[in-house]
Image 1: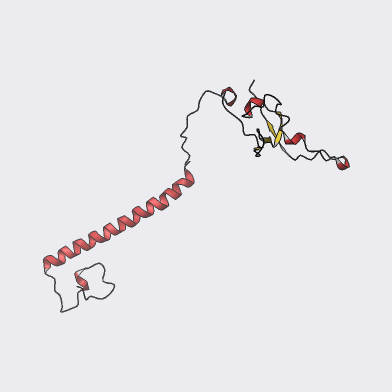
Image 2: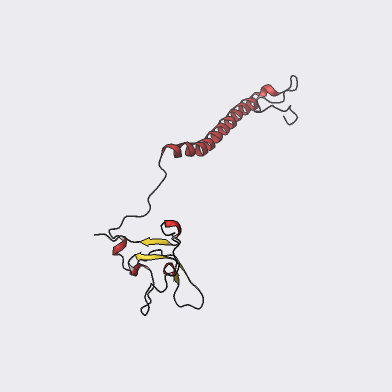
Length: 153
């Protein structure tokens, strides 16, 4: 059996050379049974791998895959006292407070995240320091973002 031709898988008794049969009848029966078992197991493994890989891909095309892990709470953003908004700012060495890189006229100042009790926020807002370009009757060019907050009513 070790010197058989290539392509003799599975090891059925019919692959033995004529006149050189070396298996007994019981060995041939066991060889056929084990060969069929190997084929069945091989087919099962290939199908299960294809099912896992292709099946999950095909299923994802037709089924939503989002699972909500968080639970809704009854508090709104404006009701949370320690919640701060994203306000573009730049910290510069040598200054106590950061420079605000946006227009903060339409935002509640409690959302900025820090407070200059002596001079307020307008001193730190760089959008107040830039001269607006009004050439040719065009509206002013917006160089900074506008941060807004609409509190619930």
